[in-house]
Image 1 (spheres, rainbow, N blue to C red):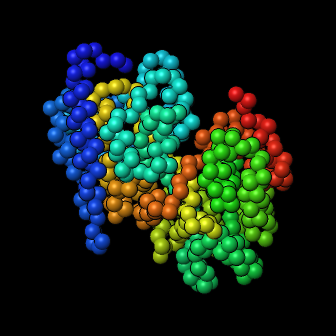
Image 2: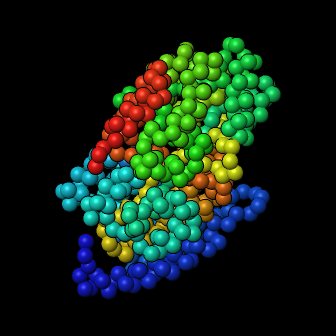
Image 3: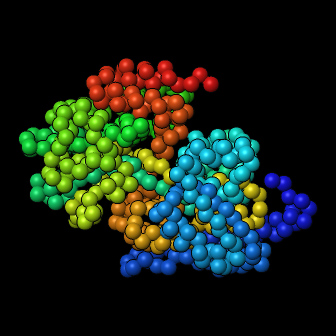
Length: 455
């Protein structure tokens, strides 16, 4: 949307104010004492200084985050609304991914959308209706997020969208008590992980080292895609992963075949899986929600699944380092720490001072810490380096934040979410299901490669 003359004049004031905000927010508002309770990491004075410019304005949000997860989001904006005079209008939609492109066609776009896939972000950029992020937001991202995250909010050479929330997929769930009782240590390298797997198989004939579930209704197979993506980041490198996702190397490249071969050493080895459920083929029919549950019954020892799996443990299960279940980082043999994960990005569709201010606020440590405090039941984290992990309620969320903030972390977004939907949400899912049901590695990768769209 273009400005008329009077709006351009007002916008120039807003942009100048935002430049100050970008610099001020990069200061020490997120500092944490080395010991003691979490500090108050929000400083709204810089946002309140903009009230004369923003009073009475409205910013609309459109997102896939719906009840009950929407409540902490709305709570996290309240102080910003009060001190700026902006009203934030929130709209959640379970069919967001389908409806957002349709709304672009009809001209019914929100001011801001929380987009959970870089592929969809690129699609929306192609409409020509998405507005590049302001300089103040870019400065905030440069200061408080890694280059990897900024890249995922960039289409072509244009930076559009700052990161919002995040999740960590590079996790292995286990029982701390069982490990202690058996004298097992959390593995620090991939080789250690395989050694531990072999030892568990030799020690306990009544259980299996691993359990897994690929079942997810029409999306059956997606947990298998996560296995391959996580392993490729460890057997190859981030550059290879990027080329594979972008189809700059074929899906059946030898390096990808090597990674799938490593997965087969665990998932297709009958002495290692599928604890509590049956043979290897039971993985395809076991739902991902049920996949890790045998850990609580001492029928399996480890389950590779994302941080969000914490919500699937039965009520009353203590998720903590000294609890019933906990998760350790899926190790690698290298110096770097590859991290597979996902998240949302804040895209704008209206060029106005109030929209810029809200975009910049959402990229700041002020918002990240406000959101952490508002999420009283846990289950949310951000890669914002200004987030004080002590403000997060859940110990797992705290650990996830520490993993994301680790200087050695090399974050890569879930590959299937960035591939063409015919592959990422199609043949990749179905062929990984065929693979776990007995199809060989080469046929699996060849079939997916053949399905890649020609244009």
